[in-house]
Length: 147
Image (tube, rainbow, N blue to C red):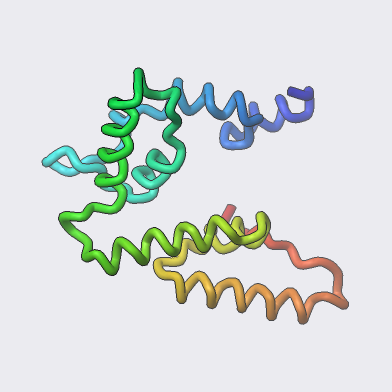
């Protein structure tokens, strides 16, 4: 890691090189710290989603544990006991839509936390219109002031 990147990482722990980010996650992101209900379910859906998508085969002791852990993480994120099939499909489609967006657009849309695919599309279209209006006035900053 370069000296500049080390300084940035020291100031902002979320800005880390990929390998360092994985070590940070393994050392600091334990399931126990996330808020839970009285029944032990995770409260924060984003935390559950993050855990599901970031899970790696190497995090398990073998294939059975990996599959079991993925099922557990999937249930914590999608909550099939609470959501309908249609809601679960919408959550999956929304996540895939966000994933296929170009980097800067994806970041901008995720900052705005759309709750549906239609909301995400509206954000992308609004951004495209804004970008078109600003073309003659310099580049559009896609990073919101929320970050």
